[in-house]
Image (tube, rainbow, N blue to C red; front, side, top):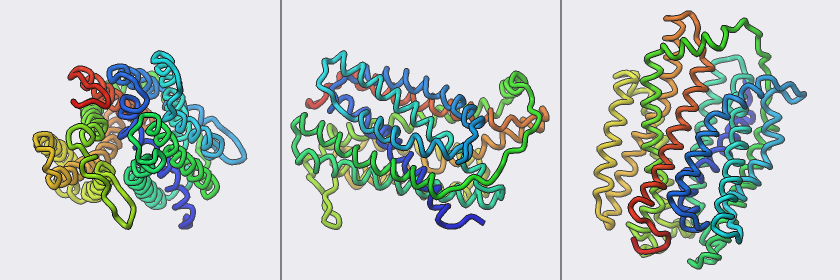
Length: 410
């Protein structure tokens, strides 16, 4: 039986991962165009190149971690030794150097590429840690629940507090130099928190399960089985589509509130005497609605099936998104209402997707006698990152195509 402090410790790891992940998904494109000073099309291309590379790096990290042997175990050492590099590189990804345009582009490529490498380097072993903390499936289910709960808590707090911190450190100034300082210092706070959370995750967890060496099928046979796995191909397309949808919607949010809604005209909204900006409340509310979607996914899919639940959620999210972008900028109540409904749909999609990938492994075993679970999940993870790469790149390209100019009336 795993103690509560170890469950919480494991949850700290995904809280740390999700805090930076949300900054990348929601704010980094906006930072590069409106604060750092890059062209939207150039940022889109950079995202595509670096994230496609990163999608192929995950399996490499997994292979290396599987072969790691230390007194701390296989996976925990990565939390110890990469926690500080993770924070430092993440912080300097949001630093604006006094370089020329080409110098800034090189700096952005280098820091963001390094961040993606370190992110994979710490996150893949963290995810793998679950399998060696306990041999009991019930314990693993509980640990997964703690992981997801803390991930959403980390995301919620980050999205709610990030822009108020930027405004605080910039002295509420809109001058570009002050904004650059504000963004950097806000990420310093996030980075320190992430490093501490990963170190606590290392300190509070234990590896108990020693892997049993089994005779494995040749890799080429696994690949052949995967190619013949028709349900996997269907899920591959569904997963890429879902990530493209989410990436475009997330990446466009800050632009939507700055240039369309004009959130500056609303000023700050004080809750518990803390000044929040409209976009921060919008994003945090969406994160809370995601949790509700995760909770609803299991009972609904148990009643009507995973496939129909997934298809219904995607279709409803699509229709609601079309309605969302047809709203007037003054329809704040409807904007927030649709954000909740769309986020509930989005929150239900990804648990179902990963659950159906496990079903693909069962299908493979029935058809071929070989599960190839690791290959199915790692290749599926690659496809998810590919969808994210395409979606964020498309956001930058679309901004450029429609003549976007940072910090100007659009």
